[in-house]
Image 1: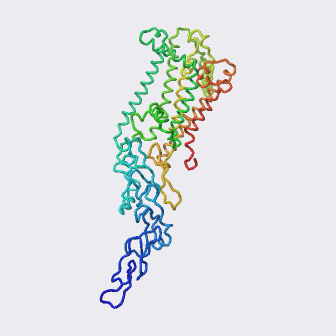
Image 2 (image 1 turned 45 degrees about the horizontal axis):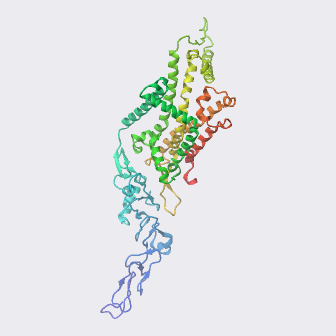
Image 3 (image 1 turned 60 degrees about the vertical axis):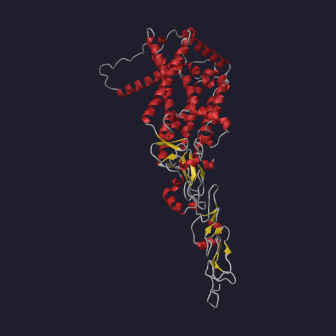
Length: 540
């Protein structure tokens, strides 16, 4: 460029250029560069690099690309496609965007500033609640990088929210409502009292209903009589139409379809599942959720409630049957059978105490087994009065009286309870590693996003779940199999006894050859609703 007052041209500095006859040097435009002094024109940056005005080298990535990792500008310029990568789906990348400063729009979240994977925030029942919770970051802002280093994934959350997908409330003792609002949790003691009161009320109501139905003379009463007669006709049509088998099939399909979303991360169209979801929420065994939201209780305590409350209910039911039998036994007129009692030790009997104690234990066990066998083989139609049997036999018969109701409860509860138990291992994984490094993920429980999988908190939950697996999935399968095995000889001989009548719910609808099929059906449901969760997602 020719400078005024000089007799010769001077070379322009790198990053500038001048045309023929120009009197001054001009900066290279954005997206071009001039590496050498005295260049006649600026050169466009190689794809997909960009530059600012007056650049001597192209050192950053242009729009819709991001810089994977920091490096010397010369290295970036020599291998632009190794350092500049396409912007991730749903993200925003302006000029000079690095991996840590990728623009995350509202409604999206990522687990780490070093990750290029964006996760859409779920609404959790609210209307566009995911966008309200997950506010994103300032697109391309240079200060965002500093804040991300301090806040991590919480940088993408609106004030008051934290955790994966911003689904947790930042304030302690608060829970998420309608996907975008936090409310304070109610006291746990009050919620536990309400749960216990409702369970007790249901038990009393069921007991009164059964008692009223057993009163034959009440069929002629004015008010309750029509209801009891209607119940008699309903039971007659239900049994005569063979509805039990049909209801079992329908209920089995319902039990599996309601866990599709939580177990398999898939769901049927809403027009098929809207009513089943409402029904599932109504009859869910997770009674704690009615009074204390999930985030207020924690999954460990919820699991205890889910797994133990049905046990208490069934125990209370069977205990009621025993108590009613023994009450009738005590009210029966004498004579009562007297059990043979051994004579006390004679004078000088100062040896064999251990052997005597063992003999007493063995005698008690033998007596209990004998009472069970006698009760099972009892034909009550041939016994004139209850006082003709020992109290142990009456207790076993009382247990068998309400065994059908207990088996129905186990049939209804075990798939949903088992699914809740196995969900202790169900974790949602989020990528935290850069694209150019081995995959590294962080996982959180799907049922309690405050618990990171693989930590001590998570292991304490899975340890409890292992015990409940023995109690419910394995225990119910062993129970069904044992009862059906005990019924084999009476069923094959066509000589029903008290046990076959008490367990008719398990085998009545099947042909005698296939009387054991209910145990197989239970195993199928347990695999589909529970054991499949033990398969890691990456291997599924």
